[in-house]
Image (cartoon, rainbow, N blue to C red; front, side, top):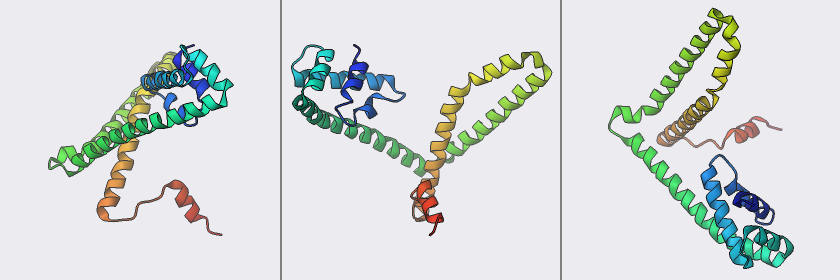
Length: 190
C-alpha cells in the first residue's frame, strides 16, 4: 500500500490527521503521510506501513500511543504553518507601509488587470461564437479549459480584497466584523 492509503487508514484512529493529508498540495500530503506512517511503524515496532496499520487497528493501546505521538508531531506542523503565515503577514504589512505608490497599489492594479482581461476574453469569445457559430462547441470547450487559471487568479484577487479591507478597517480603528454568519445573526432579531 502507498503511504497516502495507509495514512487514510490511520486517520480512522488519529483525529485531525485527515486535515494534513487532504487538499490540493499533493507534495505536502505525501510528506505528512510518510511522516505518520513512520510514526506508526515506530510505535508498533513493525517493518511496513500496512503492518503498522493492522496493528493499530487491532490494539487500542497502540492506537492511543500513536495518537499521543501524532499530537507532538502535529504541534510541530502547526508551528511551521503559523511561522509561514506570520511571514506572509509581515510581507503584506511591509507592502502596505511602503513609500512606493505602486507597491502599495499592486492589489488594485491586479484587480483592474483581472477585470480588463476577463472583459477582453469574454468579448473575444462572444465575437468568435457569433462570427463562427459552427465552432461554438470547440470555443466553449477551450474556454472551459481556462477555468483553473481563472479560479486561481480570482482566488488571489478575493484574498487581496478581503485582506485590504481588513487592513483599512484596522487603520481606521473600526471594529472588525466577525464574518458573514455574525452579520446574519445580528440581522435576525427575535
